[in-house]
Length: 401
Image (cartoon, rainbow, N blue to C red):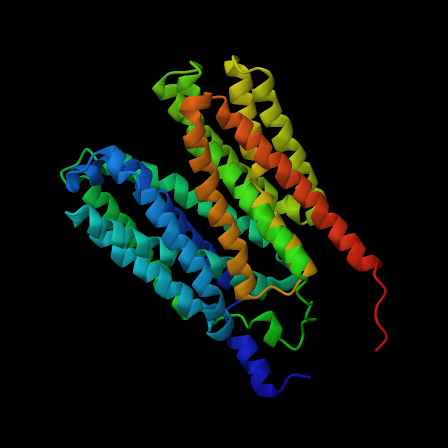
């Protein structure tokens, strides 16, 4: 039975829903900053007197920072109260976004974006870890909601940029608006109590880490995020190079992909509470492969491209949060473990789009869809291995105590 002091603390503590909304706000902020570089790249090139070819390496620098942030933040969440760590990460992003549009030299801008990526990795690992610790076995719909709110932020940033680039403030005003939006979010999150790690919670059953299963999940995230980043990053160029649309229609198609991804995450909130994680993942992966196969089967068809793009976005939508839910069912989630998940994810997001870029001109634009389909197909095989690993674990006899 809890003591009277514990009962009073539980009564006074903010509700789980209120704390969940604080994490959702944090992920809206994360989406805002993640989507900021692409539409402002020409303005940053002008500020630093660089051409697009030279400044485009900022994507790699930022991804490297994200990878380093993911690796280093896991242990920090295991050892420290998580909400202040995540709050500091958001505040650091806000401070750096304020500086980005006024930095006149490319090396200094690269350093700033390296630190932005580091803070983004810290916030991303924190939100996914702390939400699991808050809701435990009931996290599935809340996890889909978390990734939906990230999509909201990512959709808002291009609108903010579009409304400010024609003003006297230009991209400087856009970045300062984004920075200002992060301040109240960071403050709110810092005021919320942090959930205890599962390994420190006496009410939770600690499920041991299975190295083979952990490795398979990391590889799955590598392949899936590579597919998502590859599609979102290359469908515009693919559309134009295959003569399937103009620059305007290709831009709309790219927006449609991210819009379908965000809408799918909204739909996934109630669906995740009704379907088991493994079942939902099987449906998602089958839908992705079917959508990509449609594009590959009819490479000259605009209709197939648009329908396939919508299907790919919708079915990709819940894969990432659902795999996190599946991992939570099989193992006790720690900050260190979540960090490994995001190491795999961020590595895939860097490497597969880079490979596509290396093959695009010598092999042809169809490399885009072939590479993405191949990555998704291998991810499906890895998912099958995860299911088999789990079945073998259940079938193994329990050693005598």
